[in-house]
Length: 135
Image (cartoon, rainbow, N blue to C red; front, side, top):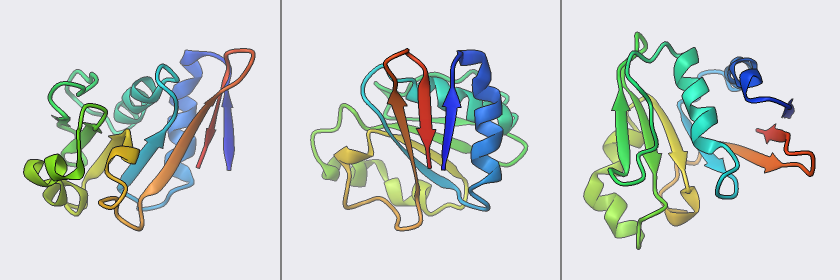
């Protein structure tokens, strides 16, 4: 399924669309080139979940935890990982299998650790600078 986004202010509707089409799924992996808007879209997803904290990219911390009425929301950015062992050291299993929302940027850094039921979200940058979100 695809959703087209022409302007950033349309991401709120895209977030609702994603949750409407993914049921009870809690783990989402985001694949897109650098600068395509993964973090920006995850911020919209967090807004939809009524996250109370300020959201930002966890590039240096690897994981950010946000509070919401739905329980904790975990936002990962594995871009800086050198190998999967670093994710083990972080205790990734406690997060991924917690039944809380997990949004994972750069999942290609940990291909063997992604839960089988994770939802793949791909963001494509189109020639006109719009984005196509595919689940």
